[in-house]
Image (tube, rainbow, N blue to C red; front, side):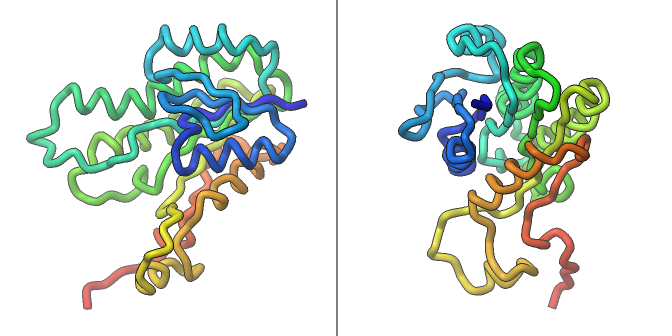
Length: 225
């Protein structure tokens, strides 16, 4: 059986990733500060903390790892104006995304053999922004750089790719215009991300890439009426 770790596996996207990977015959471990979905092996772990990551891997006890999905991170992008953003807030956000991915990858690589894969979950906010999202955008932009750097450093043994989701939700109470601003005609769902992760985990000739997963929204030119 193949083995996969998903960080942030208790959240909206992470829970779907855990379930989809389990259905694809992976043994899945969730590293999160919250409990994983039922049936998923759960490790309560702050993945931005070096000691906690080391303890989590020691408790895990696996001798091999086929897939690491770095999905954890504070999801609220708006921390107010840059003049009000404290250093502690900046570090809290960037550590939850970028430092966590570094720590988890560093711990995972010794367990990964030929053909293993890492998928980093970015956001379209790595390439476009709303105001007052500097810490979040910088974190996701940093993951973009980390992805291609790791692909070069770890290849050909390990492939490293990323996914940049746009608007992903399970909310069914959306307006028609919310869907219409996506060229595919709808807002994204967590299973869209899971399918992309499964693709990248098996795409043997793809590395160093970031797949934008936003229904074409970031390709649509917008003019004021």
